[in-house]
Image (cartoon, rainbow, N blue to C red; front, side, top):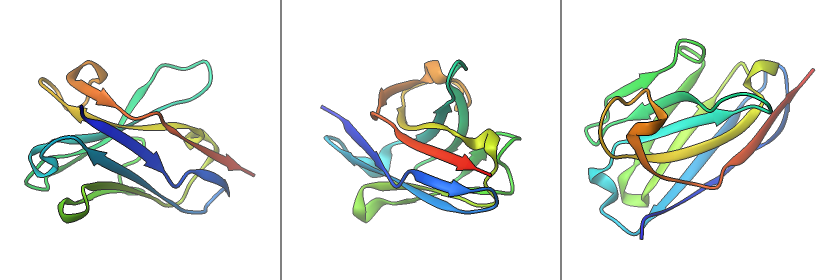
Amino acid sequence: QVQLVESGGGLVQTGGSLRLSCAASGGTFSSYVMGWFRQAPGKEREFVAAITWRGNTYYSDSVKGRFTISRDNAKDTVYLQMNSLKSDDTAVYYCAKHSRGSYYQMGSYEYWGQGTQVTVGS
C-alpha cells in the first residue's frame, strides 16, 4: 500500500522558516503528482502546493512567493520550504498523492499522510 510520512514541523517565530519532508513508499514515486494541504483548528483543510512528475508546481495565493515545493525522486521524498512564516500559517500540514481531477481540491487526492504540526508564534 502507498504510505506517506511527514516530518519537519515545529514551533517557530513570525518571520521564521521551516522545511517539511514527506517520505513515500509502496509505489513508483516518480510517477506521482504530490500535494501539500493544511488544516487549522476549527477550519477546513485547504490546498497549499502541488508538484507534478515533471516538476511543474502549483501554489495557493496565500503562500505563493513564500513557500516552495520540490521533490527528490531518488529519495522518494517531497519537500515544502516555508519562509516568512506568519500566525495564519499555523496548522497541521499533510502531504498527499494525487489520483484524478484538480490539483487544488482535496477530493482529487487518494492517499494521505498523518500530518505534522506547524505552530507560528509571535
